Image (cartoon, rainbow, N blue to C red; front, side, top):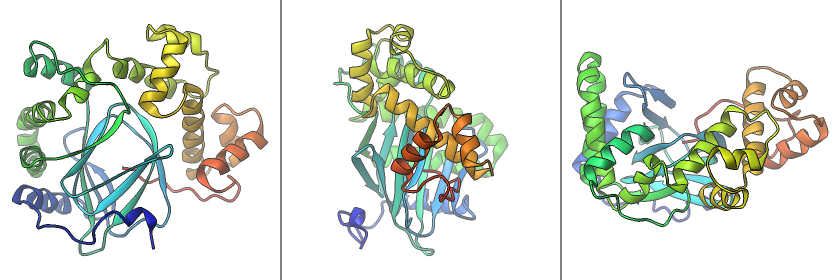
Length: 309
């Protein structure tokens, strides 16, 4: 028995018409399992025909994911976020996570809609939705669950429906995407979503620190220099970084290095070369930390590229 699935009922109430339509459109645009970026950049259709036997590791960028069918658990550090049909998972910054599909069969696959989030677009729409400023929210994890109401699901379905006609999508997808973002901003999670685009928010500043770490994962890190880049003291950076990502900047960099090493190994590069490429000087340290994260020493691991969300 998969313990992660214990909290998910085997069946639930009938899907709403918007959710059924979204599931049908996702199924039509995923001829096989995997994550497919469609004709509009940033719009993805995801399908899995069976539960994962093992955790799938990856770094997920800022995005909103709406499940239309099936269920999945995403792990951030020691925290589990389980979502099923009509629930959405929002990533405010790039996060290294592990995931496991809990409910999926060939006849009723796991189906998920994902939209990558653009901080500048959210900032522009926030000014329209909240001309006097967004609601004040306590800043917390950059990963949170919420119900996706019919209006949000319907907007996602209409965005998916445009994928059948690329010329029409080029004209109308920006309009429907803005509608979807506006509905998200007007929802109970709107205040937290708005933080992504607010230059003075802790979430936005940590997002900038995360972006620097992703671009320079193989380089030595100076916490004082990183704090200076985002206009924080070193102690404030450490506190906010851990609050948002559940880990310290050094832990975050280590996990990025290990993910990149695993990706390099999946392309055929040897373990020793992969460890050196991502910044490890000690092969034994690389092997220990790799095994701690992925459950196998690099010499025994057989990584495959999969999408964690």
